[in-house]
Image (cartoon, rainbow, N blue to C red; front, side):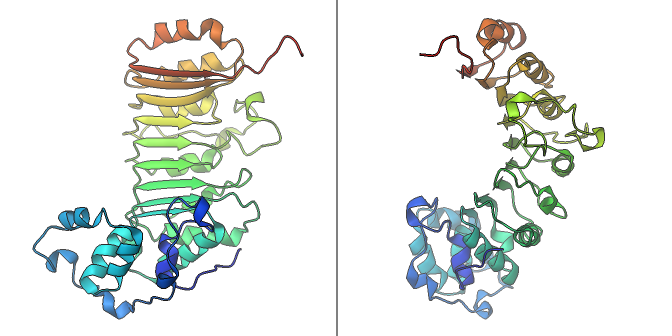
Length: 328
């Protein structure tokens, strides 16, 4: 596991990358690196609403235009402004560096004030050398975030640690992951009844020895390991995006659920199965985005869409023609 490069717990929760040029959120100033806020000054027993006649939502709107550095200045002003600025600083966390991730993990585990404030967490890591200890630490952090509603997990291609989601108590509304579409991920989704937006970016199986568009069926996977959802799972799902999923995963997610906005791939010889899977939604499809790798798709796609998706309001199609007839 990589070692953290920051010591201040307040720093790590709002820093998003190793270099300012590549960060999604600006890196915190060196002044804040040296700033320490004693835990005793946080006033755990006095809610913000008791310190002002204005509702918390109004106070949040007042602070929303402030920059990160301005919020940091408020953070160390006094107890009242610490509570207000911390709500803004830790509401949305975006991290794309393993070392910064570890620093944030330590913040969450060492400061009980922070976990209830985190509502959105985006972890995007490409380092393929992460050890299991990193994911064990991450699991402990996820179990400490009860208020989380948006979760984005993008790991290296060969990393699919679905087990880090075990024991989590949050109830998500939006979930995006690069984890492979296998049974453990389906088991986690079975527990998330409030998800409305789901994006599955991972491969359809743990076997990555072949390219995803060469075999998109579950025929080589044991039945107990296949990606299958309970009929009662994801009752509020309306938006579904898939990157590598074939017809079996699409069918498992869409069938008998109110999915009306979809973005999926179409693979050679499997396009019809994927389109038929979309028709199993419990409501008419309104918006559809397709990226086709099937060279035959232009010959039948629009007729199929016209016949089976008459209530479409928006359609976006990209054809990637992978075959050729002549080499110049």
